[in-house]
Length: 244
Image 1 (tube, helix red, strand yellow):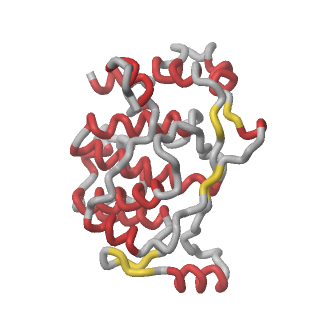
Image 2: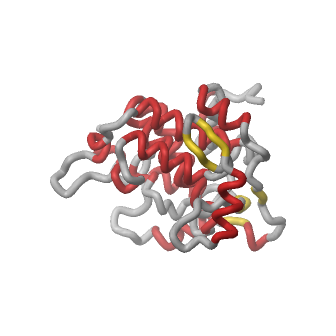
Image 3: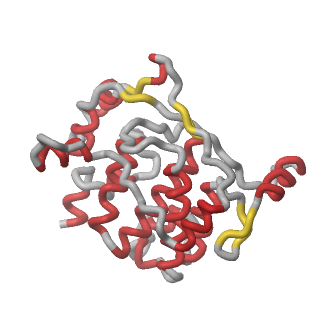
């Protein structure tokens, strides 16, 4: 695939591509074996569903400090397709009995926990639970200055396993390499962003360099960056000052 390209050309071609996570972990293998089918994912065939990065970032050129190197790269990309995802909703206090019954009927036991195998939010929830965190907001620094990562007091290995399983479930639905757009503004797309951010954030504790491409991919995936991945991605705003 990369014949005739030098290292820089290969690096440029791969930047922003969602990394591929090998589905080899014990929990991941179990989750995929119980997956009845992949989540549906599609890119509407319409000019209305092409994301123009240059147009989006045009509103940011006059911001204090200007655009970061990462944002400048994304702004130069040609229009990309916008993808939509099927979503399996975790039942909550406002769910009706029909939804709760359907979700329960489709649920299976994975890693000793009962969940719908296509419910990406469930994988993220368990990942944060095993890490000793409530949600992604716990990764932010506390008011007393304590770094969010230091508040991970649980079983990081187990937490990463759950996050990885969720990412691998998501991967079953997307082509590879994937460098298109999946906007967070589409409500049904949000579980995909949450599981990717959970995995990247937990991986960052053990392997910051391995986590970096995941944060970069999240910004390419959704330039609005509702989860704040740009601050943890190489070339993003404040990255140099916080990572040396």
